[in-house]
Image (tube, rainbow, N blue to C red; front, side, top):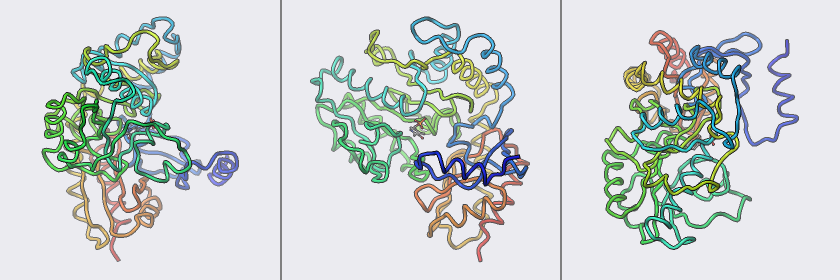
Length: 398
Ligand SMILES: *Cc1c(COP(=O)(O)O)cnc(C)c1O
């Protein structure tokens, strides 16, 4: 057997240091539980940033993948494959949109949304090409490409990577007046996370998204919701925008769409918007590949059949209630929606993350002082109780 230490040493020797993982090697996983080579078990309370909403190795998703593996895995878009049509149909039904465009990673879907909005601006709204402006929020996280880090306000993500992409304006998250003030005749879109995940589970004030929707509509500006992390039931609704009954013009989706198996992302919008693409104008070799589609189709089927939004809502309420029983003077806020929960401390949270891991709970701090809990939505109440017991021990005040 290779020890965790051996594996970590080798990883650090050969790998670029663009990540600093916790000292845990996951060798096997099933459902909510993960196991290291030494056979110790841990509760996965991060779920690969919501990519594992279905838990590890969901039997039906794995079966769908295996079945497709034996048929055909890749065709490129030079030819049709027999699964993409079902992917489109399912995603359109789920989002209520007329069309979708598949990619692989979340960042690619964000880039696709930006291209869509710019071209819509030029072709439909009548903004001069090269003059399109897109408004984004401070402290956003939309991914890692050059254009996307252009939109970032995080210096660690940007330093040394210039020159950046023109055409972006940043406003305060949660402030609808700031959005309204930033709109010009050249504004084509407002890109926003309905809840800012990486920034520390930041929930905007009530009514914000509704106000944003009104402002966008009134100014003929597309509302683009980056639901890569919040989408597919995580927050207790199928999409987080639905909490305020808001329908964005473009959904940006990823993470859980791949069922924890494949990178699968997409944008969904109506034909008057996604119709701006003609053959050759955008694409991806692996986008819409049959293996990805088979996995995503099964994932979407399970989401609806097993009412994941309701599960996330009820389990999330229970989880937050239990967390609030914890008496620790370092905890300044416990907030969340569905199974998307942040515990904010007055001090750097790393010491508590270490205690969690030592007690068998995997979680990670985000923005230094907040610990995000986003367990697989399939977590049972029994598992939740066991995890909460461990969290209580780790968070015990001195
Ligand atoms: C993770 C994430 C992305 C980027 O997805 P990748 O698959 O890592 O490229 C974009 N937006 C949000 C909100 C995310 O959480």
